[in-house]
Amino acid sequence: MRIAIISDIHSNLEGLEKAAELIRKTVVDEIVCLGDIVGYGANPNECLALVRELTPHILLGNHDEAAIYPEKTEHFNPLARIASEWTGNTLTEANKDFIQGLPFTIERHGATFVHSSPYEPAEWHYILSPADAQYNFQSFQTPICFIGHTHVPDVFCDDIWSRDVVRSKRFVVNVGSVGQPRDNNWQLSFGVFDTDKWTYKNIRSEYDVKSASEKIRKAGLPRGLADRILVGR
Ligand code: ZN
Image 1 (cartoon, rainbow, N blue to C red):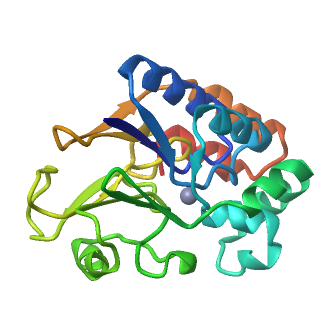
Image 2 (tube, protein in one colour; image 1 turned 90 degrees about the vertical axis):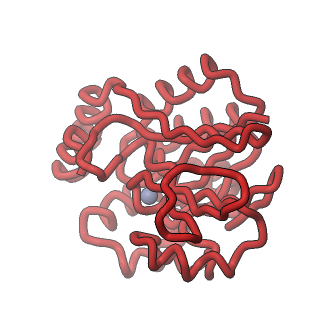
Image 3 (cartoon, protein in one colour; image 1 turned 90 degrees about the horizontal axis):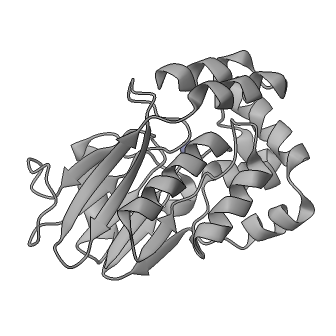
């Protein structure tokens, strides 16, 4: 069983379309989306439609939640808050209803999937370091847990040192972001996990980032959001 794991699309349709094309070519059995489908970018409704076409396995992210509950933006920076308000005003009622029904976490094929962290998933904690990851190993039962949220692809092992996913050890794997990478690499990021071979691959690819950036400006969203996806920060 090969599973493609996508996360943090953030209304970037160009990024999502390219990821979908690559996933089709990679030939996977299943796709899981770890949430933050909306927020920051210019195509929230279009991204929700495409994600739903790709997979029924979709989790809630903090930006999805904030788009339907504006009071949840209290910890957002000013640009994120403006984008969240814009997203809330742009989403269709049907899409808001859909977001409302999304779960925080799922378990499939011996793996755990969550947007932010297996420890208190509704609190949107960040796993930024091996130390953060260590704290989380007690909060899920499977050998491996896939996360997003920081927009930085990474692999954390319970022995601290291992960077390659292997059987017999436990891992927290961040698949990175399709729509707004933040590791100084503007190329989209997602993961493919093979449950039979127990291998994991992080995929990076260029996409039409200029068009996605231009759309953010034309939508009247903050200029900083249009600029950051061009550099991956
Ligand atoms: Zn995000």
